[in-house]
Length: 293
Image (cartoon, rainbow, N blue to C red; front, side, top):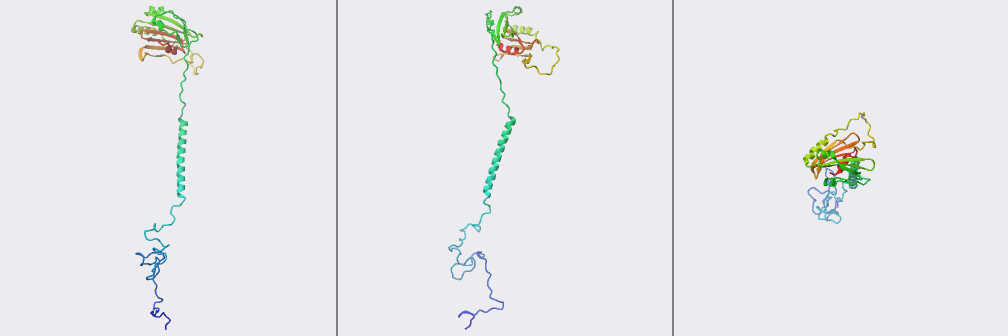
């Protein structure tokens, strides 16, 4: 009996080339090209003929999922994006938004501080009223009754016929003196003419004697500002002239000038009436506006 094999098996002899040749083994878990090598074969190599599938093969408990049942070769592998990336990105975005908002608020605050100007305010002083009672006027005609008895802080002190203006063509005329009770006076000459044309011509003759500019006193010009409490400190900008309007319609003209002696003169026409007012320079323009006719 030979010891080279079991009974019934052919005797194996080494060939001249060396030991019996064995096929190269494939790496574990790598399927052969074109699929599994045979039915029931394990992924790592050929199965024994007719034997059961190797543990871990397709369909075996605990083995790999069949083709199409997984998410791919990277299933279960860690993601390529670091876990800290998303929170850091969100934090950076929040910081950018906060910075932009703060910048806008600071810019607005700076612009408001640079361009803000105090609102202009208008101080309305009360209209002066007389400290004394006005005198009674003797004349009772419609024209005389329409003449005011107070002008600002001045009250009527006396009234008499103006014979000079009556002789010059006025139907009626009056010279009236007003006082503030403290030495200040205001004088008004008022005349009623027959027609508007007569009144226009009368005003023209009355205006011929008015100074155009304040007379030169010969005093040297001073570059120092005027004393706030001195004479003329509140003097209006004169001469002034324009239309007399009643209800938005022109009814005559007016002229206000500096008489050069500390007083001002205003002359104007209102329809068929003509007026000549003399007042302290600081009050002449206001007195003309407040006269009311």
